[in-house]
Image 1 (cartoon, one colour):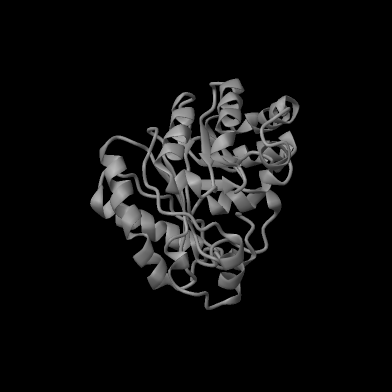
Image 2: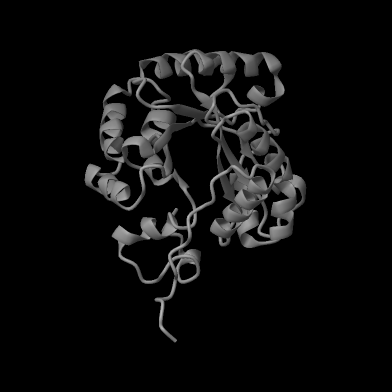
Length: 275
């Protein structure tokens, strides 16, 4: 995500070598979603370069490969999981959680498979699970079943909040594309662990995005006061202003919880001059 074209020359200096792009992104935000790992396990050397570009307290929420979650549906995956964990090892403490994003067809009847999968994973990592089947949100019994499975492995349930996005029809090409692709699930804002993770999708209109996240400002502020350490990712359909929006969200939460540490100072896009 730190190579997003719309950010180059605005939030990140351009051009930048690949070995510097994440370092510049980390000047804006202190966490990142590892989406590219869904498509293939990166080389260990590539992951080592990510570690070199970030401080030890930077947070990666790294998605397990689709081979594990979507193609094999958590079965017969010891070898690809082992390879993935080995590749992620250079990140060390930067791995906030390994993210198990499951397909919409993964239903309550499949929860025992998930429970067995989680129990086989090493306890040295935290795990976060994202589900999209409507029953987990509409049926209290199915929700309890999933929560029990997650609690047994101290895993978190990741909400992907698209409610603000789907309140009104799309008005841009990016919104129309997201309208087709993004899941429509009810709002969920319950934390199971002391490290909750939230994914929020707003609109390309900043005012509507900010209006839609007010619920999360309340929730995240409450979690911080309880001593939890949440990670929040702010998206819009085009993600053009995502780093700026993430900092604005952080500012709103910090206004409620002044003890929250400030975000880092961005690296200047243009070289500093004397005049």
